[in-house]
Image 1 (cartoon, helix red, strand yellow):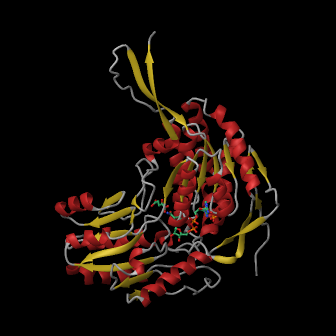
Image 2 (image 1 turned 120 degrees about the vertical axis):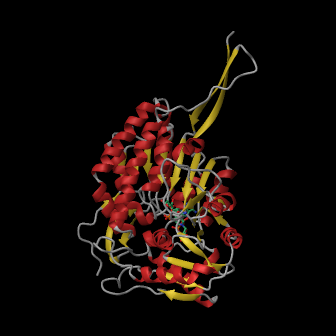
Image 3 (image 1 turned 180 degrees about the vertical axis):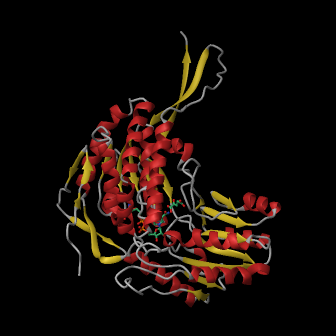
Length: 489
Ligand SMILES: NC(=O)C1=CN([C@@H]2O[C@H](COP(=O)(O)OP(=O)(O)OC[C@H]3O[C@@H](n4cnc5c(N)ncnc54)[C@H](OP(=O)(O)O)[C@@H]3O)[C@@H](O)[C@H]2O)C=CC1
Ligand SMILES: O=C(O)CCC(=O)C(=O)O
């Protein structure tokens, strides 16, 4: 039975007002822990609604871009305070809409608050350099100008943090934004935008248009007045967005997949490595682009590590993320569940051995949710699909190796290069790993997931468009450098 009592409908936010889509179509956002529960209705907008938002953003950006960084920062500080006052409510919406456990959702929302404050502060920091001119009578320096209108296309796995880590730097550097969140998490996105509204942002500076990726996401990519597109999501759509933006000369930034390894050396602290492999691989039901997916273990410690890992994985409690004591929630959608189950089947077909898990989880109250058991395979070779493709689910693949050189070779033998960890107490091995690992984020004795907001984040190889987000790196995407040469007459 579908639960419909008091289900609210969320609107688009265009030019400072909440508006229905012009075709009056909505879609239901459902709870992946129980498909019968509707979390809210969201607009399924046509491209005309996007065009109105872009037009509003284009007009509003002119005066927003003229404010000082400190003035723009004051708005972001206000949003941070408002979001902070709504942490529990917004985190609960996130858990109900995409399944991650309530403590994780709270942590993510608090991270959104911290990101807003970080970029609010950036409004007071330097944006350029003085460069000595060869002309002794001249002053040469760099300044930064905003891009104009930025299209923000975001996925469902971090419904608060990712939109905020894209919007906050876009705004502080003087751009106006149009956000198109993943339709699965559009209710959470609308609540985040309510915080911007409450902070009294000038009309048109921040806009939200919900709808399908192929209409609104593609519309942003193709719109001639959208000067920059920042995207996080799948490899396939990311490349499509990049090609579309390039074709019309717009700036773009893509964060896409990962196939992140953890290397466990023979001298590793095995308990630490097990904890980190489980946390990095299975938290958020494995739905992080930084999630550990391949566990490359030295032969001499393989059996001990495997035993410890399997025993801990068997203790994981699966269920509704709103319930206390639950460690792992459902997959975010039925599609995602089916993708994960099909990768598990592929693993079995291609000869990997299932050590634990491998099934849809339907115990207790879980039959109406999109749950899957935490799963570990062994006898995985690098040519197998589960060793090469991003699964985005709670599936770990154990790969046994004999040497450190082999471990790094295997770790690098994928198309992606987002994050990677090593567990070792040997400094030579750490240095070898730091030097030779092809990944944008390399971590020693720490899990592969876990991004710090003040540090650059992005991948090598097919994981990104080679740009970096977050920290001070964000200024490179959200502004253009202007080199100024001044000579007294
Ligand atoms: N790197 C990461 O953090 C993420 C990686 N993924 C990977 O992608 C797989 C599929 O996830 P999925 O949600 O389908 O990812 P998508 O790449 O389809 O979605 C990401 C965003 O792009 C939008 N989008 C979809 N089609 C287009 C388009 N033609 N033009 C512009 N924007 C578009 C989506 O909108 P809408 O949702 O409305 O379709 C969403 O807002 C996952 O299994 C995982 O492997 C997924 C999410 C995050
Ligand atoms: O590991 C994290 O905290 C961030 C992961 C991320 O950016 C993603 O999954 O898209």
